[in-house]
Image (tube, rainbow, N blue to C red; front, side, top):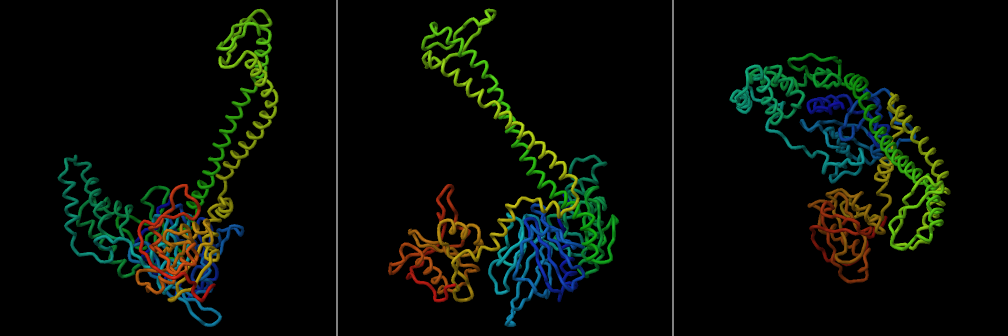
Length: 563
């Protein structure tokens, strides 16, 4: 697995992209279940790939598309023909915020913020309106979640590599002293000192990642002054924008990490003239092969699951055949019981009889709860069932074994594929359908435009209420429902604590109108953030439990502008 893009790299990338992409136009965005491709006009690189290694995102440039035509979904249609007016990093949070301006046929302009979150954790690439509020659209995997706002920052560490004191902080000195205080043999003292210093750097300085902390502290032999001099030099280069892009291979023999500055104590495997060449070359030599392996594992895991399932079927059918092949024995037992019918009595658990050959004695199990005739009939029924089913079972086993061989052959062929577009075409379609439904979701619901440009969405039935509340709504959206009365769920998108009470009452009135209390004069309506609404396990469609909320008393009525 390739390491995720580092915070220092993302910071430099944001500044470099701001200079390179400003004024370029987004001509197309192709999305699929494992990532997206942005096509730009007027940029140094026409094609940009956002790829998800399960929960680890990567951003690279490319020479050609990776997505086969049948897998393409239109992504973020609001941005098509939009002009990029700026890109900025959110400090060392591994987040890029791209500002994009669009216009319609009436020369009305809109301004959007596209948040590209390149930190681990499966966070979505999310689109926000500049007017504020939650995400209006997202790209990512099925488990991706959007941040509350475009510029929501991650938790900051005490220091940033961009702003460092000249002298080593006391914490770094104390980390070295902790190692010296331990009863450690001299040969391992340097490693212990470097380990404590690396932990301190990682916990304290924004911009230092685990691989970099380990490399710096080991290169400086755990000496605080040498460590701080190296980190301070890196911070000075970053704060002044003195970028020197290179790929470094100190993480492992098979992995390469991209950094925007020269690192102390080690030389890069490869240097690049600019960030665009770095993203392209690093992507082709490292990211794409690693992503190809990720896709292979993703597809192969599904094949292996099917192979295990089919293997269980083969085992079960073989067991059925083994039991069916005893049909001759059951018929023989039945014939013997007929012969020795006079010896049979109810309550017997078995009977010993001499076989027809006269040379063997057989013990035949009996059911003590059955009569002699029922025991005889039972053996003949089992014999008949086995004789009738054995040919079917053998044919079934041949078919299942052939399917098993075909699956095993496919598994071997998957390992030979080197083209990621071919592998993408083999991805399960479930995730693609989920993403398509999410992007089309607003058109599925009844909706009303309210004051302040907010929109209230209404479910039409139980199943649609579930989709509206638990799939379409963001955690910070407001949820409305007639209190104690059956009715529709209502979601007020992009509402927050500053939303006027008049707008909240409009949304509550809609919830009251689409309830069984429609003809009442006044209806109590509960509302809360969607994050406090859950669906009980195994409950009927549309069932919801509100964990906390407030109540509004409103008259059931619809706003005039019914979409």
